[in-house]
Length: 454
Ligand code: S3P
Image (cartoon, rainbow, N blue to C red; front, side, top):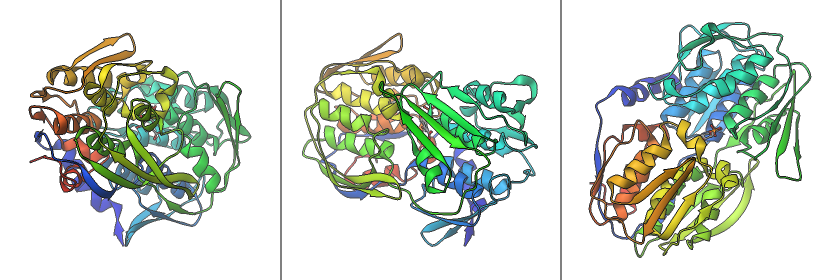
């Protein structure tokens, strides 16, 4: 058994080391059969719920990337035991209410999900906990999570809105009914996790449905969850308080947000024929694939089935000619992390692609709206931002030849390396270090499929 503490060194080294630039060149077909690593959102939730459960949880397919290891270390610091056992991870939980005060500061690195979900957990504990993150995370707004959690009883020293800060929860949380002002699964999840510790029922209302892994997994671990879907598609999710969770066997499917880069590479490199096995196909995550099909992409879904409460299947992708389209704002939550790579594909399409209602992109690991538009401009693509919309003029081919600034953002790095696989001239990204936060094997895996990433 290997404790997750041994991941600390490799994780932190990625955050402090010198920038590592990489150049992508026009590639031969991207072909083969691969698996992508486990879904990041599900991996975080599996570790958290396992730590809050009584007994042992076995997690297969956990994403071993820096962001998820930040959650694993935080759960360990709070008293759960997390260890690797062969190809799986095992967590010995402490029960809802059973976590204990950490010795030092909880460092969440680059991970918004880890820090925001953990705030929901900490809300139920009367202990002071200091939290921090890297430079990117310390710029991201936490008020969206702190607002509902403060209503429930969490206090933040100095009323701070960005990390680092110290919080103190309470054993007397108030259950609330909270309507999300922004479509955010992180905020929904933080409130539901806090609701586990509150007496009575806590409800989150979401006008636009966001990823629902927390609800699905809470049910899987034995919590009382009620989901009501309104006629307009919005949802009310209620969790029963004073909950008891029981250790479970979780199987984490492949991450569709990681698969997105492989799909894109196959679409733009002529002659490609790629199968990506065992990808999560939860409808709250598949807006990107739906959009690509509307743009003319040849993507087939094979062998769809359910695994441990989530739909999964294989994606068969062949290179395709794409056409520009209007991407409606209500689709944003189901493809929120895929906009940078969609914008890259829009550059290879014929005609204009208008991605509407992308305001949330401004508060991701970087301002992704600005970083994507700037990256495209550096590669000779006409792109502009109008309010919250990103508009890309596709000409069927991309000049390339630029150096792209990644702004400590893994998805900007992977999106523009992918662009370079199909552009006329090579494309350099200024730093690939952050790719380790979500997809540590991205570069070797892509090379194995034929990508020119020398
Ligand atoms: C996530 C939710 C999304 C997404 C992030 C992961 C989650 O963030 O961008 O990468 O696991 O809940 P928001 O909730 O802020 O939209």
